[in-house]
Length: 313
Image 1: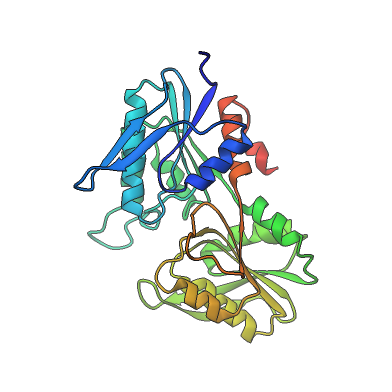
Image 2 (image 1 turned 135 degrees about the horizontal axis):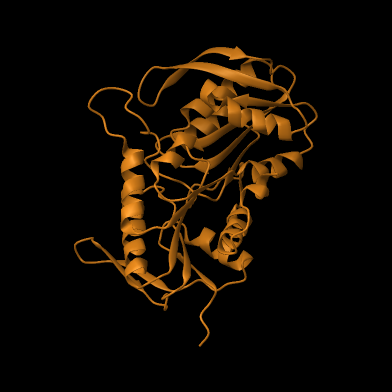
């Protein structure tokens, strides 16, 4: 039997996204059983022959982070020991990304630790999307393809035909990303919230740089975790006279009371990608756009040794 040119595997983290990627590539999902031993340890069995194959393993390390990270590592090890020629870890959402430096004494740099674990497990390449901090690419000693969901999200926002769009950034650190959104929305004005952190997951708004009054505001962020920052940004936009408010984010982690906070902010809609599954949290005001075609096209180009950066031109 002739072996497939390349194969798509997945764990339990986001099987639906992996299946969408395989459909775009006109491939059948390769077989891997990921189960648990009676004591909770992860048991992996690769069901297809991968000797000499170019393998892409789709496994975001979203909550439960530790479970999904261990699945990723063990599957990489299984594929390596099964003699796969090249293993690309496709990690649309990279967990442990917040701790990318020593902000104070006696704390870990968890993002670097996870990068080391993925490399030592046997990955030859990593594909990820909208890292919480772009410098994490440098933590890996293997090639990293860093994709951006902005083209997919902006395409959806454009179809809304907003009359006076304005991009609002949740904090100064995300200004570069927000500026890219503003540029792609026809040179829309940009506003930035200057905020101060009052606790590990709590912040307060100090000032708004720019004007949102009378505009259709699009609040952008890379990730929604507790929802505090983006909900506060939406509230401030309303108070400052915004005509409408929408939230746009790549990764909808939505932990804790995030859903309640966003719902209380009374936004027109929350636009997210399927990089992280939100099973059980679906709402009429949540719109999920898929990044399967973007990831699938990047996979195809990597396999054929074509340019990936040209996807963003």
